[in-house]
Length: 157
Image (cartoon, rainbow, N blue to C red; front, side):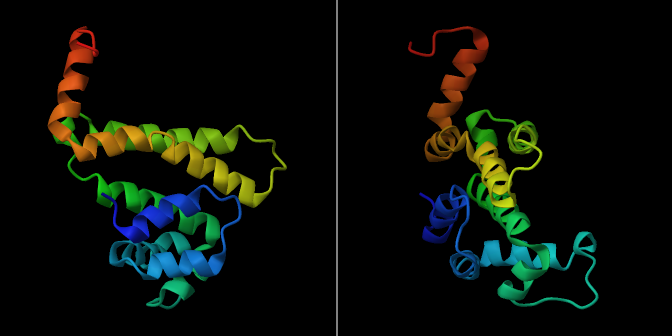
């Protein structure tokens, strides 16, 4: 079961233009999300001159699109840490979902609005969330299904 802030984060990722105050509220209410956003705002990538220690300032520094991307990755990463038990290669999975998010965004018209691009990226990133939820809920059962599929056995059996 997802913690409430992370469940809200997944919901807000599907909105094309989420309310910035709601994003700040969600990020602020979950230590892992707050840490991920603040860490990104202080990374060399964001070229900080001074360190940021507040979530709202971090979101302003890195921007709403990047914040939602970081939140999406943090939700998936922290929630599904034990996917190897279910027979999933986490590194391959990350490459797949990030590539899908980037490709989904890339396929838009060049003049697509920023919020549409952010929503497309999030949709690509989260499109397989049901599969991940099943694997996280019962890793052994999911692992048996994956193993059966890989060996050519009917999954229904």
